[in-house]
Image 1 (spheres, rainbow, N blue to C red):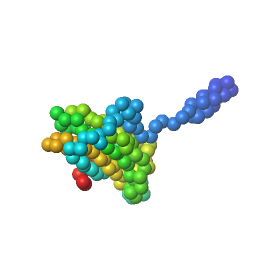
Image 2: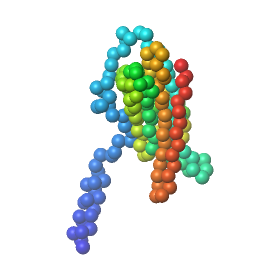
Image 3: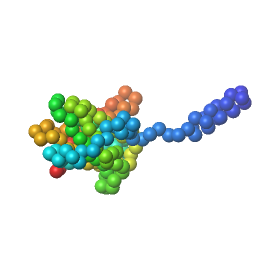
Length: 169
């Protein structure tokens, strides 16, 4: 019995000391292959979009919050043109920059989508977090679509909702 208890304690210590899971992800290895210099493409239309995202919501009262997983979906809605995402910045409830996911232009092929995932344990954004996404598109190209999909499941209970971006420039 003493050996079992010793083995159990050692196992907990070994597994408990391993590096923690990422709390937010943007597949930089995949997208670093998509970095592109667009300075010469002067006929592109510039845009900036605002997206509300929730890493937490209030539950029962203002003193209790519930953590959420958030997926920021960035979509090229054109079936003909490539579009360019210039920057993606994540801000917390108070407007403080939490992190920049990319600030070098990447391209999205026609009808392509990429995501940023904010894990449920990442609560830095709080109850009123935001994204600002800057982009460029060819003339007469439909604007990109940015959506926030928030969800959480505990036991048999599930919660999910979505938000859509608003062009601000």
